[in-house]
Each structure stands twice: as structure tokens, then as C-alpha cells.
Image (cartoon, rainbow, N blue to C red):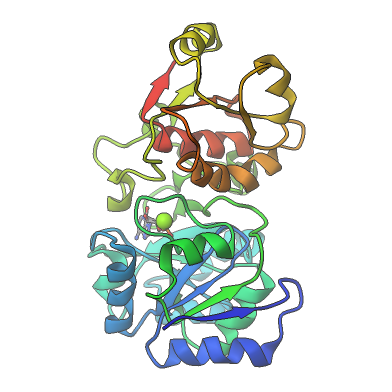
Length: 338
Ligand code: AMP
Ligand code: MG
């Protein structure tokens, strides 16, 4: 049975969140909002609780989870080696939408890290996540609260659609403000490596981490590493059941449009006039690109409910946050026209 609780996202009631925290302490699983997407959390030291996450999501066992903390002190029981060395970088980006990879302490269960010797950790800034994590009193392992392969949930209704009935508690804290999963930076290697672009842009990270290495696969059409740096990257993501055609090369757009005369088009508000006579789905505004990130997964979830044989999505200049948006669109697309 699933208990649904609703809280004020900015000023959550502690009494209400105490019930959700108690569920974590008792080995249950709780879906909770963060500033990126909704997470599906369990006590990271309780192996049977962690295994429930994999079972509920139908997630492959080698796809590691991110551990969520509310206080840097919690790193002591999770991270091997000198924490102080990276303290400055953490202080700039935490709390916030950046996950860091460290070498793990032996007591972090291998079930959490997919068998890796490293561990992914993040301190969210969302008020609900912060209070919930503090009351839980233990680091909480949490991937996104969707069924494996579906777009990450940015609204409680997405979590309900995927997981109602199979999780213990869903905390409804409204729409998640950023809408894309965290940026992941690996600090466990000789030099820092970007593993996943996200709401914190490459430009922002590079200001603080100038020697950040951007792997080639993030710049390619397929967007997948030949040999994954993390196992989870090899899995297909977000794919709607319907064909989703991503058009990057504008010169080929007319050809695609005439080949698919009835397909709806996902595009920014500023471009919708160009497709007069066709159904368009607005993904946000180019002049406020964060709105595109915020809406992206909701729009991808809508694709399957459309009465159409395929859907066309217009590629965007991969700058700033739109680099991260394009990363997700390439993973979601069944065909990339470039
Ligand atoms: P999700 O929270 O659903 O976005 O999934 C977490 C993602 O974090 C995984 O799919 C991996 O790509 C990444 N991740 C977690 N732990 C590690 C790790 N130890 N090393 C590299 N990547 C990781
Ligand atoms: Mg996920």
C-alpha cells in the first residue's frame, strides 16, 4: 500500500515528513522531490531496502544509485581518502544539483554502487529533501523515481503513474524546479571528469574546476560511451514507445517534415509559428532556456499519449543548459538527423 503525502515545497511541515523519515528507518522506500527530479530513496546501509529500489524500478543491478546527504559530516562514513582535498568544490556546488563521485568506504554496500569501488553522492537543496534527509538520519540511496527506461519524474503525478502501489510513501512537493537529473563530476580519478551534463552547466563547473575533462562520447551523435565510464550510461533512457525523430540539421528539416506529414512537432515557443497547420508541443522558451529543461521530461511523457505514428523534436544549439537538454534528447530519440 502506498501512502501519499502532500507538503508545501518551500516550507514543508516537519510533522508530516516525520512519517516518511520513519519509513526509511524501518527499511521502506520513499519517493521524494528534489530540485532536479523526484528520487526513490532507501537507507543506503540497509541492503534489503536498497534491493527493493532495484526491484520496484526494474533497474539492472549494475546501474549504481546516488547517495543523498544533508550534511557534509555524513561523508565520513561513505568516502575513502582525503575529503578536505575537494572541500572547496563541494562548498561551491552543495547544496545543489551536482553529484560527485568519490572512492567508497568498505561499509558502503556494493548493491548501492553496482559493484564499483566508487560512490556517487549529492546534497540536494530542495527544502523538502533537506528536511526529509535530516529526519531520516541516515544517507539515503536514491535513483530517479521512475520505472527504468521511462523519463525521470518531475511531478508527483509522474511518480504516481509509474510507482503507485509498489512504494511505501510518495511525498508530493509539486513540480521539481530544475527538471533534469544532476550534473555528475567524477573526483575519484587523477583529473576531474564530467560523466553526465545536468542543470549545473559545463561553463559553471569549469569556473571552479578548470581542468574538467569532457569525454568524447558526450560530444557525439549517439551520446553513448563505447566503454561506459559508469554502467548505467549504457542503458537506453527516456525512450517513448513511439518513434521520436530528433532533427539537429536544420537543412534536413523540410525533408523530414514531408516524410512525416502528420507527426506533431516538439519545439520552443519562439519557433511554433513556423509549423502553422501542424500540432505543436511547446517545450519552453529559448529566451528562458531553463524552462525547456524544466518541461522536458513532462513533454517526453506526453509523447506516448498523442494520437500519432511518430513525433518530431527540433534540436537546439547545445549551449549552457541546452547542452544537457540535448544530451537527454539524444538518448530519448529513436532517430537522430544530423
Ligand atoms: P539516476 O539517479 O537514476 O540518474 O541514476 C544514477 C546514475 O548515477 C547512474 O545511472 C550512473 O550513471 C551514475 N552513477 C552512480 N554511481 C556512480 C559511480 N560510482 N560512478 C559513476 N557513475 C555513477
Ligand atoms: Mg534514472
